[in-house]
Image 1 (cartoon, each protein chain N blue to C red):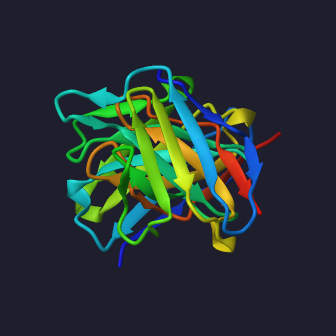
Image 2 (image 1 turned 90 degrees about the vertical axis):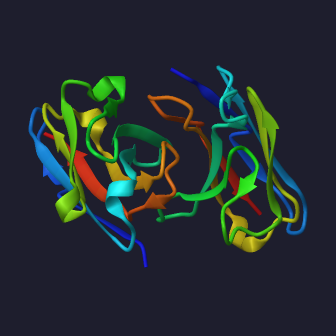
Amino acid sequence: EVHLVESGGGLVQPGGSLRLSCTASGFTFNNYWMNWVRQAPGKGLEWVANIKRDGSEEYYLDSVKGRFTISRDNARNSVFLRMDSLRVEDTAVYYCGGGGGFLIDLWGQGTLVTVSP
Amino acid sequence: DIVLTQSPDSLAVSLGERATITCKSSQNLLASSHNKDFLAWYQQKAGQPPKVLLYWASTRESGVPERFSGSGSGTDFTLTISSLQAEDVAVYYCHQFYSAPLTFGGGTKVEI
């Protein structure tokens, strides 16, 4: 059975940092592009970043470029999101998602990040 | 960036009736090299992550009921629920996976 389990969310002050992790099981992880998608409370879905199967390509939402970094460790079936210079507007549930290409067809349950003074 | 505009924002449909959601893209999502539209539809129920219903605009994901169908090409797409069931209450999103940054429509809340 396919599982994506996110961790690392929590409460952080503006300007602070967090590192989210997502551990995968039940599928061949290194065959999948991996993504982070977020959803602010009561709002819609917003894609944040993705990374190619071998880690050779990364793409980001403009508003997080230079602040967030996506990475992966295929030996540990894990993808990460380092978030620096956090802002109040980064508050959201962050979902880890994967797909054979850019389509995201596997989703985790999400981890909540709250940025507040 | 590709902007997806969904309508309506919400709709109330009686059980057994048809629900129709439209999604308009600011750019052509038909990739000539694949002859496919890079457009997907997701369903998100309260407190759950999204679930893919359709991709390539009209290909149903495994296990998705036949009452869900997708149509359209290029810049205009439609999701149709032919006979609404109680378990279909959710928010529906269109999503383009044609190019980064990937984008979603604003969502359509479907209620009974």
